[in-house]
Length: 99
Figure 1: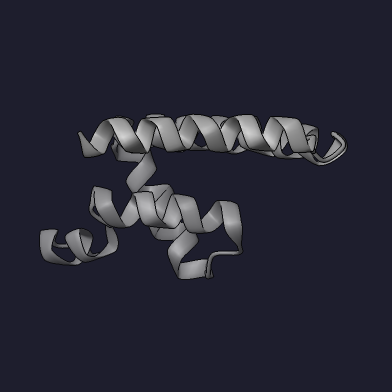
Figure 2: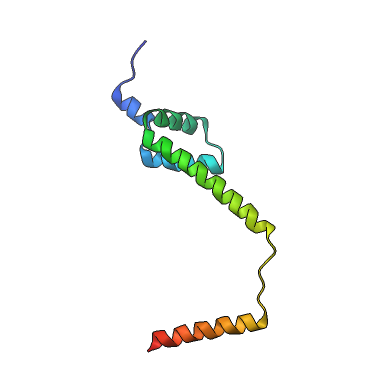
């Protein structure tokens, strides 16, 4: 059995930036078999990218939950009086910026 030389091994391993891109791609869609294997090898050797993968998955869960919660809420509406008050505040701030 022939051992893999360093150049071949280096080609197989993705650098951290590519591994992070693949981590994000994996959360959004499917990786090719080659991408999956290369990412797994990189993650085996790179603790920083493993942490990135865990953190990225956690963020996706948090945002998915927040999105679901926002979709369940009724839309926010303002009364005409509230709209006028907001416009007055904007006009006041704009006037202050001009001076």
